[in-house]
Length: 346
Image 1 (spheres, rainbow, N blue to C red):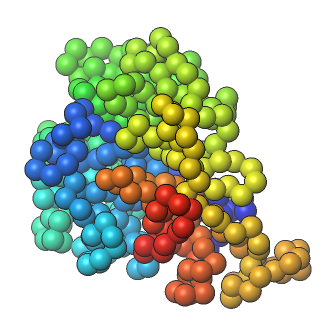
Image 2: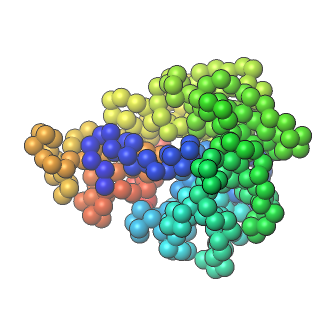
Image 3: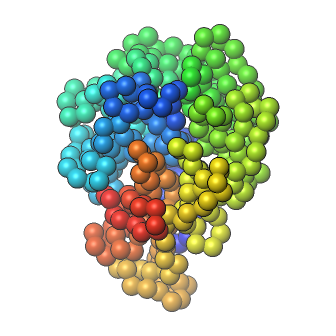
């Protein structure tokens, strides 16, 4: 559980933020139903990859209700089914398989059938930021010198090879890998030509790419930008924020300061909608409101630390007093309906 504001907002995903730093499509038709060619969508992998849709109304996720195990459910939360005792992140779903890095096995890469059958370890080692594309998995992995490199392998674990040394994979789009290179600047690697191209000169995080360009966050400059594919042009979409996810012509993010709520912004219209309504009161481990936080050893506050977008539905991993009162646990996956209401999804 997470004590006080700074731990609620940042401690909750400290591990997973490290993994993702250390999911959008080539064509829209490839993100739904039988036409899927990509195992990811929007910027969910950049948020830790704890939730992933299959384009057919199902969600594969790390359960907050059951010791972080791998589950499947309908997008409305119905039919929850445990697939494995593994603790997954960087979840992808494609072709009847679920792919993920397994925290409980040193972040080795696994795959399992969507019905829980044929669980297989594909790659041993500290792996993260998986992007499954057709019959290929692109991913980051640490070598024996603790250097992060980008590899690829076939979805059965064969033909593993180094693609870009000394690089951190951030995204895949249209035959190109987007990654952090020297000084954590953003680079692009063309898989056909083998040509790397530097796109900016800023420390970069939360990258998504689509037909309109590249969306990414510059932490040092405290701004979220939209740039052209070649990096030549850019515009600021949001100043001040964190946990950015770009999807379906909208930007989802947590506003810093004040109540640390999550918002959805339409860059085309400038319309901004608040998605969460976190209470600002402190409370203790039993859910009792605390007027003087300094008088209690362990106090908590509502908040969130990652946002996932699946088929137009937004979810936040966070802490709620209501979850503590109803389930005995603070941490939960929260379904956002776009009006500020928050339902405990898991």
